[in-house]
Length: 335
Image (cartoon, rainbow, N blue to C red):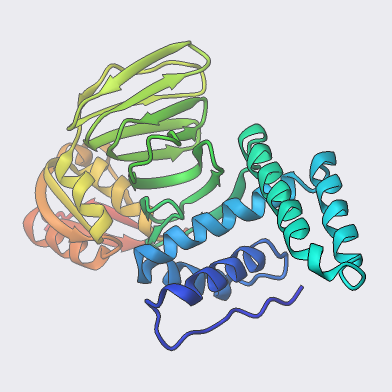
């Protein structure tokens, strides 16, 4: 399927927006749509809030038309319009008002069908590679930050907005839309937004939810339990249904990683290495687990192992050696 995307000399002109939004809906729905085209689509969305509005409207219209394709009332109205059009040459003076009535009937049926039948959710997958971070804006205006080695699936329709976190860490700055609830599924739990900025981290069967601003309700389907977080709080749960009570969130780290930095204050070395290892295929490891008790503070760029190793060698007399397993092992420097 080849879809030509219309261009315009004025990116903010109201007319071409609708045409381009409709073309994007068709192209994104095609199996031939490339990663480069999806990236171009995201840049187009980011260019103007009007683009987001136009795309959402075009997507809803597309979904409604698909849902009503088999509607008997709509088909009957279309047949009426076609018959009246066929008689236009013989009864030209009556064609215009009759065709108008038929068109109004079609529009009425579409409107009724829109209220009666929920549009199917459109699924879009977003992911980052190891060491990569990615910022994007969803069709509803929600700002999303994907951390390294992260994958999510977004399902939106006219009634709800749902995100599934497959792996990694994500920050959501949710756009207000009272008519469409926003929820995030991660593992066995669901996070329901109440107008917020929050983060979800999924590592295997372990899920952590941290709240920056607003409020969220976290529920775990297995244990039938739920908890509401306040700003500066976090909790964790696993596949067994166990959920920890809310506890303080490391706000410095939570608010720094989306900008590519890692801020640590009195952080244990083993915990710091775990965080740094997220961004590199070459892992840092401690030769002696007791070294993990060392605490330190500082600001490090995500993935900048060299800067961290320099600090550890100069400040804590540790020695770094590369092992045969492509690891960097930290030892106490006997000298």
